[in-house]
Image (cartoon, rainbow, N blue to C red; front, side):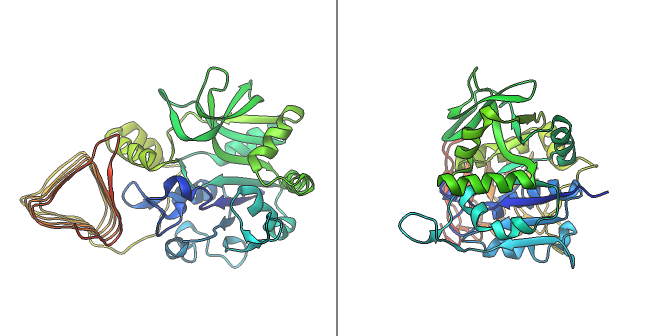
Length: 377
């Protein structure tokens, strides 16, 4: 039986923190793990929980996202009723200084209030598209119901010394009950849980939050939560599996390299039989490995031609690595061509980049070098 829930996915409200990758696309359309886009994980998590009504909110640079989603058939969302709906750009009359394109979660929610008022589903699941994980949303909803929470926030205790370039929501909870929320760049003993920006609540409660935000003139969803958690039943769902919070370009590179080297993380994310990750299907040719190819510990998508050496790297569809070329610790987007005897180390290329013969480029694991779309180097 399908969950009585509707999904809302915010596709690009954090473009500024990923500006190198979002010059020509929204955050949701950023390639990840060689054959996926970031939005694939959001859509798959919702669909695997039998949530078949999903609204994707976008405000600009969304052509690539539209092409990727298409009719939604690859996620079984091409339906006469329900299915997937893209909420396209609109203006907010409530913004100070006159109308402007929405830039926060709450502004977006206020301006799609007409949609929300028409929801017949009991629950709403909201998520950002920059968090990569494979989670059982049905279980999150079940825990939310059992605890009679106003809001349930999915969190994770970060591995190691996690730090973020930009402030994130960190939470302290006792037996799942939130007792403190703070904005910080790192976890602390007082606030050890990182919010993964997945929120579950009753549709009726979301309408209340939007109404109060309008009454108080608040445009930040986070500010609204911080204003209300002490007097409400706000709870956490602490996720223990693999999760990548892609909040910066360096995070993107780090987590991509982690998937290459960490088999357990890769299996947890991409090979859970009960929760498959769906993506747009391409009728592409398989990878061609010639007699001169050497490939070690890499993720390589369909339609690639490998004649040279690829080590610890992620290659999207249609990448060509010529004879004598060496690609190491790098991420190459669709259509990248590496000519003979070129060498790449710690490089991220956007789509259709050409690296000419004999060129040698090197970044560093803590500062990978990025090459923009359609460039010839």
